[in-house]
Image (tube, rainbow, N blue to C red; front, side, top):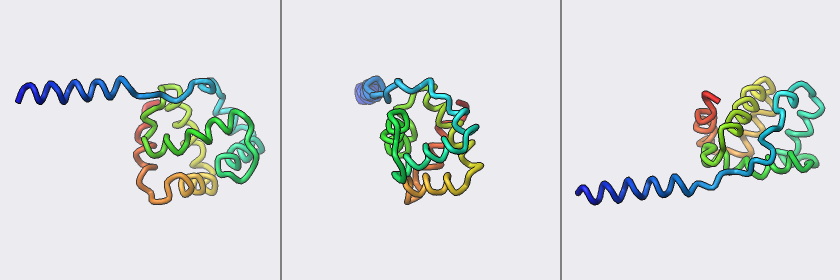
Length: 122
């Protein structure tokens, strides 16, 4: 019995170490500045929703969003979780954008609450 528990613990530790985190190239993106410029915000959201063109930075976020939703940002580092927290807290002030993003990336409504919970404290 003790061996089974040790193997389970070892397996969990091994799996935790093997987490492949998201790239950190855009961890210094100023998410607060995005919400200071309505035109930039619209371009950013349009890219994320596949409604408009993307620049290199916005495209990099768009690629990560599906995994971030489905995995509750498990592969995010602390800066990325902070950025996600700031993004969604500010985005709630724009319900039309918020609702569209949630509908696109969580149509069944099973991931959003877990994702927002993962951002708490960041």
